[in-house]
Image (tube, rainbow over all chains, first blue to last red; front, side, top):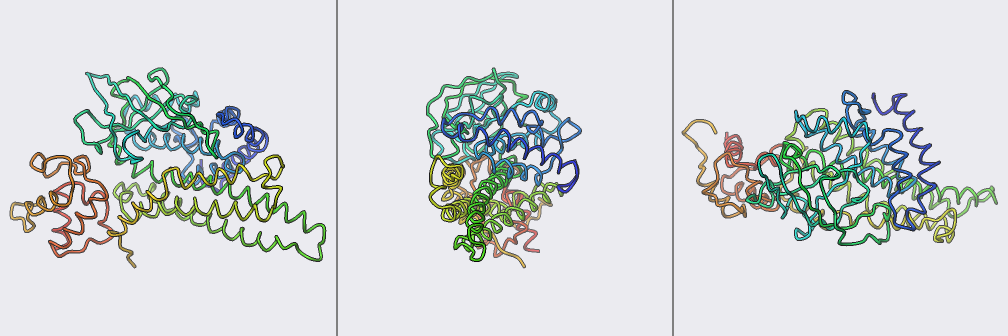
Length: 392
Length: 86
């Protein structure tokens, strides 16, 4: 597929907007109320073949680039934050195998299966006992000949029950250091999940991010052929923060749309004298523009690095710092924007039962600083900043 | 690592690694090409390592060298320092 302005992509965007309006938004409230998996929305995404959107056209996918995937995430954010998060988290895993499976025959056939069956991929990176550090694992791959066993205590596996396959990080072997990690895919039927915690949260309730004890076995060909450290720096870290920030900007933009509608309604009542909320609308719109511009610049930088294919550039500390900054600032701006939109829209947006409710938006917004806690990220950045130098 | 007449002491680098690298593997078990991150080097420890290397060898790493790759092995650290001292 050609660039972000191509006719083909515009048509795809129209399809995404259509399922957003007709399906995803229709079920969003129920998904939120019952903290259930948005099965109707994910099925609609599958019908559009969007689960393999990032797979190259030569492998049967759409061949979308990071700019286009981010745009789709943003659109989905308008209709249901949970559906958008699930799509983003799935696409991060897809990107990991598209970028890093090399010449592997197993992964080549897996990608074809993913395209054909529109399989949903989940992720188990964090582990009980490592304190949220992605670059440490306790569990290890135990290999015998061409098979392995792998058990993990995962405090969170988003939509773990509803996924088809799960990608897991683990130490390379029982003798490896905690940071010597590999990235492994397990297909449905190869793993068992014993639920150890529920997911009854303020927001992003439809992601169903319960905790599980996972036990599994598989073939060694299911281990991605590069170290997880490389996968994280080149793909998982930038892809996650950029697509998350993009979908958060969609949630924020939807809140601003609701605020705008309320200002228009007030303006109609007395066209001679603009309502006082109009000033607030101007203010919140400028914050939204800041959020979007920040994200766009970062997505474009990552897109350029991918095109240059200089793997060392991804491990530059300055790049890592900028990606972290996007996550932190976007998670703060979404709370600011939705809060301002509530001030504009008034008490009807505070109600749970009104058509202009911003209840789900504000609850989702507060979760963004916590998924990979901002304080952890800022601490990490403050360390990296001791080394980083701005060069003119 | 080029040639045998190294101007930058590998032993000195190893000594700084022991002091600042907080490695989980014993330095004597590592080859010059071993992956230090797999040996337990964290990004936090990389900061201390970098500052100590700058101090010891009287160099300053430019932004273009501030990446995982530069600190990924004894060999890569050695080559980076040599390049900066030229």
